[in-house]
Length: 265
Image 1: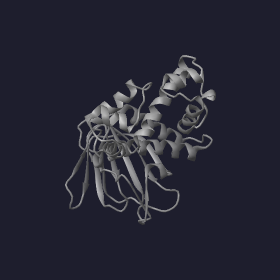
Image 2: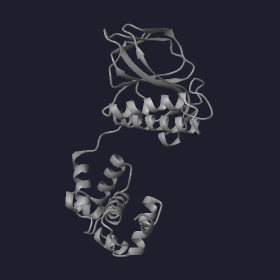
Image 3: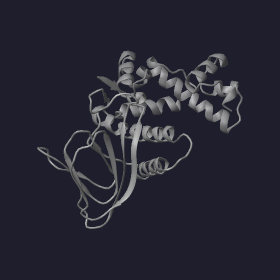
Image 4: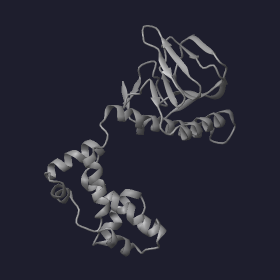
C-alpha cells in the first residue's frame, strides 16, 4: 500500500456538484465506490453509519466519506440547505477502495473550517469547471481539488501534530526583528537560554525545518519585498537582511524562490 503525502496527491475528480437541499432530504442506505467530500454551506446534516455514533455535519464543515461504507446522509434543518462536493480518487493510478493507497496525515471524518468562504468558493468553482467544456478541464479540476485537499490536510495535521509553541512564535519574531544581525542556532540558543542542539530539535519538530533554513527563508522574503516594492538593488537588499556576500545571497535567494534576485524585481 502506498502512503501519499499531500505533495504526492494527483486528484482525479469523477463528479463535482453544487445544489440546494430540501428540508429533511435524505440519501439513505448508500455505499459509494470512491471517496466523497461534502461541504455543508447552509443547513445541518447527519451522517449515519451502522454500529457508529451519528456524526453531525454543521454549516462550514466538510464530511469525508470513504468508499464501501454503508451509510445515510440526511438534512435535519427545518429550512432549505446548500451543499457542494465531489467524488474523487487522490491518485491517478489505483483506488482507495482497493487499498492501493492511503494518505498522511490521516483524514478526519468531519473537518470544521475556519476559512469557510474561501473553501466554499473553491468547491463552487470546482463544480462550475466540472460542468463546463473549458480547455484543460480535467487538469483544472485536479488542481482545484488539490487545493481543497491541501487546506483540509492542514487541519488534519493540527490534530496529530502539536501547534507552534509560544517559545517558537517568539523565536520567529526574534529572527524577523534581527535579520541584519548574526543569526544561527547558537545565537537563538543564547537569546532563549537553551542549547543550540535543543534549538535544532525544536525547529525540526515544530516547523519541519532547520533553524538555518528558516533564517534564510525569512531573510530572502524580506529582501524580496525590498527588491519588488522599494526598488532596492541586489546589493542593498543583501546587506539590509544580513548577507555580507551578495553572491552567496543570490544563491540562497535562488534556492528559496527558484530564480535569481535580479529576475524577481
